[in-house]
Structure formats: structure tokens, C-alpha cells
Image 1: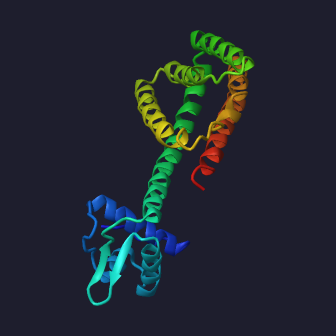
Image 2 (image 1 turned 90 degrees about the vertical axis):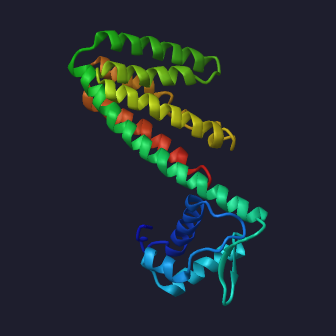
Image 3 (image 1 turned 90 degrees about the horizontal axis):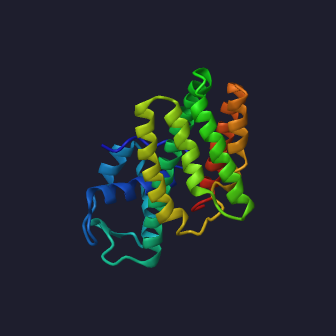
Length: 234
């Protein structure tokens, strides 16, 4: 059953939900879609609002409205329809990445807390070696992607929480896949670059035992990622 829609930006929400419904149900070009009544009941919206949203999808070339017969997925996709579908997929994936960022922030704050609390000198020293290499690569004009991964991986290893470590590794796989297909494809080469100076500051705060400062810095790190993510795909 489709969830009720929020009243804000209603028409945009309706078009997105209909597109998601079409994709999830596996409709093919030329297939007849459910009735207006069906969608209105599921979305808990008025018919005028639904009709206005459907006119927009029709103008995009996604659906075809046949008076007295119903709504159909357009037999031949237009270029605009393809762009609409791509934009929707990017938006859906962006939402998932935002949720993953939220999860990582919570976990990494906990990891920082545990490393400092338990005086994990081995992992603190390891973080120090990583940020030294991190800075060396940056000074030569390189992008320390491997070092960035190792820095965060070390936080999870130092947390002594196997479940968090496994979750991070799974999250990074999904994150990397999305980056390869969307971020790199859009040539957003500066994504997350502003976080680079923060890694040394986080390490130094942790080494000095300043949990509050280190956690605040990691929050800033993820806020930068959120801001960059908002710029992708409009």
C-alpha cells in the first residue's frame, strides 16, 4: 500500500510516488495503469490534485491519458521521460545516502568516544600515521581516497564493536557503488574535498582526549558531505 503523502509540495510528491509505483510494479510501455480512484485512495489526496500531477507526467511524455479509457504508460519513451526517470532514481538514491551519512555520524561519534575512553593508543597511533600520509598526498596535489577510507575504518576497528565495523564495510560498498555510477558520472570531482583538513584535527582532538571537540569535528565532516550531496542532481 502506498504511504500517505505530505501536503508540502504535493504535486511533486504525487508524480514521484506514481513513478516509483510504476517502477516497483514492473509496468511495461503501453500498459494500462490503475484508476484515478485507486491512486487517490492510496495517497489520500483529492482528484483535482492528482489530475494536475498527471498532466505534468503526460507533458513529460511518461504517461498517456485516454479519455474514457484511462491512463497508460506511454508506448514510446521520449527523451524527457528518460530524464525524468533518471532524476527520480538519483533522488531516491540520494535519500538513501543521506540516511547512510546519518548512520555513519552516529556510529563514528560512538567510535571516537570508545577509543578515547578506553585509551586505545594502538589505534590512535595508527590514525596518526594515516593523517601523515593523508597530508603528504594532498601536498603533492593528490586525492587521498584510500587514506580517507583507512581513517574511518580505523575508527571502527578501534571501537571494538564488530557489528559497527561490519555495517561500515557494507555502507562503504553501497556508497562507493553510488559514487561510481552517479557522482563520478556527473563529474562532481570536488565531492567531500572540504572534509580533508578535518581528519588531522579530529585525530589531534582524540589524541589530547577531547571527546567533545572530536565529536563536533566529525559532525562538521558529515555536514560538509550532506551539503555537497544536496548539490548533486539539483
